[in-house]
Image 1: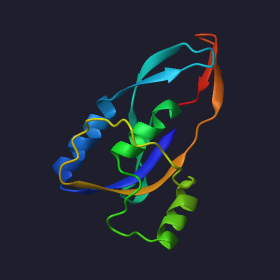
Image 2: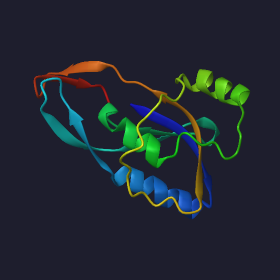
Image 3: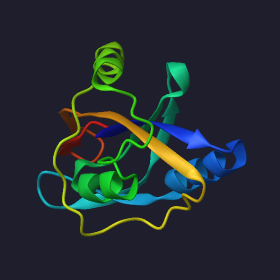
Image 4: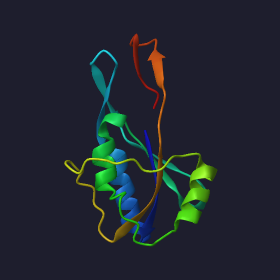
Amino acid sequence: MHAIFIPYGKKSEVELLIRDMEAQKHYLINTDGSGQWIQGQIRLMPFGVYEYVFPKEDMDSVLYTLDFETDRYGLGNLKKTFLRKFIKCEKIPKYKKEKYYLWIKDNVSIIPIGVRYDEEIFDSIINKTHEAI
């Protein structure tokens, strides 16, 4: 799964948040219930947009930590719709507000854009099916 957003703030503070996100470990669950630990991935996209890649099981925690419900800068529906079409992502789904990560977000605001879902693939190395991250 991919969370797509624009971080806004002092460059050093934004970089600290990005490093925290990259260092986060997630548990990728296979279809048979087993799993493996993977690291979060950050991708830089055009227009200062970032994409955080993580397993779908952690969607609630990631979206809650990034506060995807609040748009402090009022990007507007028309601009968000344009960005979603350009980046090929979907609207932000409803999520539970129970668990969150301790990422340092001091002096950084998040402008949420959308999410993108991954397909399931068969991994011949481990002989199991899991999310195609």
